[in-house]
Structures are given as C-alpha cells and as structure tokens.
View 1 (tube, rainbow, N blue to C red):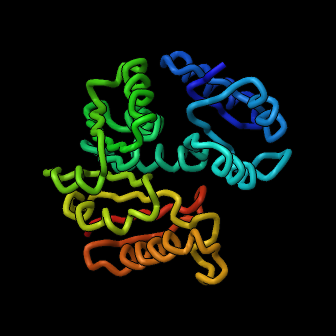
View 2: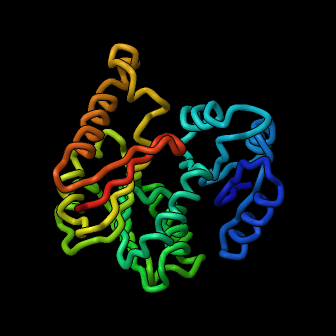
View 3: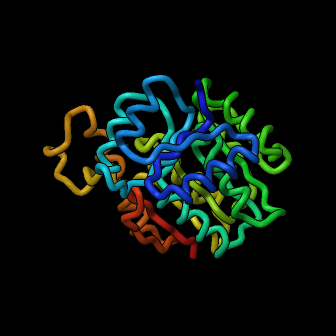
Length: 253
C-alpha cells in the first residue's frame, strides 16, 4: 500500500494523535514505533513522505535518516524541525511565506496550520514527480486557496518574484542555497526571518574538505560559503542551531 505519510515515532500517543489528525485532513498516514518497525513497514508498503523522530529508543534515528536518504527519494521531515517551525511561526505571525522546495507539500501544510489564518504561502518545486502529489495534498487538505505552488527552477522563478515576504523557508538542493541568496535577500522583508534547513550535512560541513567524499566536496564548499555569507552579511543577524540536520535562523535588520 502507498501512504502519503509515514511517521517513525516511539511515543505511541503522539504517533496515534498525529496520524489521526493527518487522516482527518485527508492525508493517508501510518505510524511505526522505531527502526525495526520501519524495516517491517517497507516490506509491503511505501510512503511519499516520512516524519522521523531522530531520538529513537531502538536505534539511532540519524543513521536511519541517512539510510533512507541513500536508498530512496522520499522527503524526510524531522520531528524537531516540525516543532521549531511551529514555534517560529507562532512567534513571528507572518502574513506572507515563501518556501523554496515544496517536495510533497508537507512543510507548506504545516506552515498553513501554524501560521495566521490570513497568511498566504508561495512554494516552489522543480521535481516533476513530486508536483502532482503536492497539489493533491493541498487539495485534499482544503488549502488550495492559501498555498500557491510555482513549478520550475527556483533560480529562475525567484528572479521573477516581487514584493516582500515576512518568512522564507529554504529546504531545496543544498548546493544551490548560495546561488539563491541574492534573490532571497531582495525578497525578505525588513524584520523578516529566513530559515535554512539541513545546513550541517550530518556534521560534514565542519570537517575539512579532505575528510568529505570527493562527490560531496562541491556541496560541502558551497554550504560553507553560504553559512559564511549568512553570518557576515551586513543585512542579517544569524544563528546556527543544532536542530535536526542543522538549521540557520536569519533576521533581516
């Protein structure tokens, strides 16, 4: 069976309530309790998106996350990142959100739930196989009037966007963050927040380039450049948090 969302969580009440909420929203969700449960699940099922608790009791969630990313193309949302997004959105109460990297639409749906009712979300996705899934998820959740999906290369789409966004969430190809940054800064409102996900690359970003596999050295170099720009750009005040696979929070001064 193909599920929209698989939750890997060892706290049964949390898993049960989250799945119940997702199912009521029109998203077919299932839950397993840990690493062994995941391996049993994939013997006869698949999921379009995975919500993963890194701190699993029966095995290292980080190792499982790495394994899933190496073996599949399924987008992974860490529970810690979900909690951080909820906190930041309830704190900042943005009226307009820009997301770079829709995947199957789960993050956009989360932000539509946690943000103000009058908040509008624009999200960008290039991968053709994910776009119809995201659109269907938005339709089934009844969020089509609040979420606008732009299809195509973010590098080109960003250049054509105008206006100011109160909150920008970057969760796209990590090697492209540095190339997106000039347009992201142009679009970020004064006092707005830029959230960049997965910036530590399982800790590789703090290692010497010679400690990183040759195929990952370009991404490694670009991410280090991106982090340097965030920390030293005169328009930004940035903090790096060890949440999930690393996240930066940048406020435009």
